[in-house]
Length: 513
Image 1 (cartoon, rainbow, N blue to C red):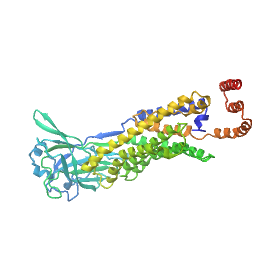
Image 2: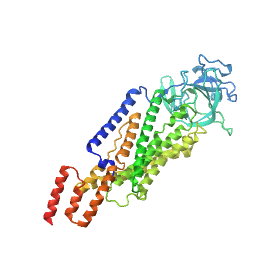
Image 3: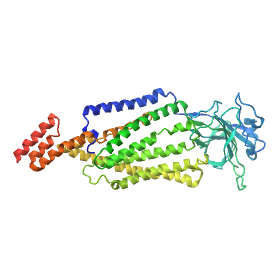
Image 4: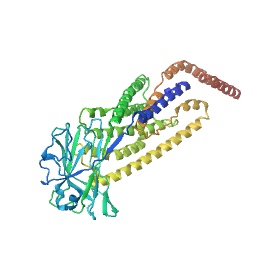
């Protein structure tokens, strides 16, 4: 890209900037590995308490608590008559509707904080019946309650009939046979606006049409519901880091925008793509999670998926335009239509990997228990979409690899020519993303975008050189000799070695003439 900062900056400044960026990248890994002592995600085991409900319904909506906190008032209507293993073994399937599985979240009785931005529950079922013919579990009314004080009355959050597919494996032991069932997704929350949660559910006996269901599912000995959430310590430091990066990136993005506004020529496609990349990474950096600390935000997961999808699609499109820009002999490279086929690969791949997740997240805004895996069409789409995305992603990578090879070959050829070498040497960029740590990877992506913005911004020095070359170009056009043309090029060379090389070229050219 003609007139970029990277083509006019000195080697000393370039090495200094590289050292600063490398230090910031190392600092990002150190920040995530040393200052954040807890892991990003934690999981608490929570085994449901089996309570006997003589009414067999949830019409009262009062909730049955497995236990009461020490400072909470004991309400007789909410007390749980816990069933022992011996009592459970004697209860026939016809009375499954009288068993309420009750879970209190958190399990230790401590109040949840709004820093727990993600809450996902994955029930695991254990069965003691020898034959399991049904592969679908239909649960009765799922009642989820919440409150913000131990003495406060429970408020109903959600109430739902839903079903889940399950798969159990036989486990033999000396005393008999058990079945260990795979985890199934229960509910996933984008924010935790309340301090206490209570979940009550039971197995259904009849569906809405009056048909008997859940006949051959076995007797559930226990239900284990691990609660996976983002740790409060990591959440606080992550939001702090995200806020600092978001604010600092704005200065460089505004600086780059001002450089583009000062140009006396139309903006090139690569400059527009860099600006789009900077805006997309800033959308991803926007710390909207702060809102979840002050308000209920069930849309947080959907918004996060949209932001990440937009940022990655912009990044992939930028790589394509950036590498194609360096095909120095390609005409009309500033026309976006020349990249239509490759951009279609990016668009289809992104939509295939992204739209299914967004549909599920969007539906869960009204029904948090809904899952795309519950229906046949949803399961088929969930299997097909990643395959389609993988195919078009592979096509994109093949095309990108071909472009990189072609660019490298052209640069190698142009290194044989002096003038071409001067223009092409500064146009090589290396992409280094090797991190599995949250903070390190996050800092690396932002440093990468920052480097592109700084190095490929229009240079004021280039504009000044253009102004100085104008009179010289007029004189050289009058003279028109090859020697004068080489002297005009030598006027732009500042190093002694290049002057010596040009003098040699001039002498050879004069001798030839």
